[in-house]
Image (cartoon, helix red, strand yellow):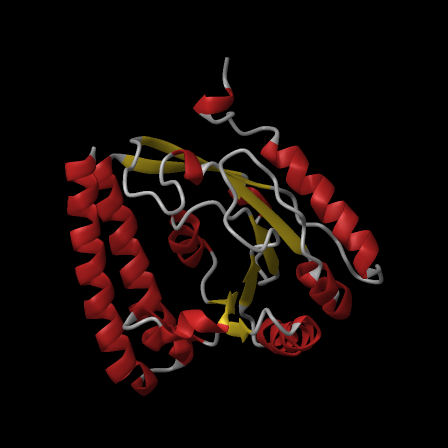
Length: 242
């Protein structure tokens, strides 16, 4: 598998440089939605196909019928790079909550700046929350999905991290529904690991959670419970099987 993983990363890097350069130089010439499809849509689509061809990693989605027609708030499991690519395909256009340092990454970050992400300084939590609510509300009003990773960082496959309150606070402020998405991508593309494991990433999408008129605390508890219930339906990582 290391040779196939190397082949994947060669194509992944070339694609990032090419689309990042084109997006940085020409991105502002196109309307936002077209810009998103041309830069992110083409890049992520290629990367996911290339991953399947080189490493044998595909995916299966359950619960697509739960995705509403109107953009809402998406809270997704974070344990790999894979879901950051996949989500851009599923929810388009979208504004992703990211740490502002990512915008300084050559090519990727430069192009990503043109796509209305919600970039925050995680060292200033109160300011970050205000930024999320202000920009998140604006993005939703503009018909743009808002995507957050409520665990805050990539977690090992099968282990659930502490839920951060940002998504619930945005939901309480806007009344927008929340959609929970979980997966087991870390079993095939582990964080910070070069090797890949062939197989099928399983993605589960829960039913939308109503939030209008509810408090942040109430929404937070409801979302966390739904998240854990969906995670329990995923296959356990091999290391946990005995």
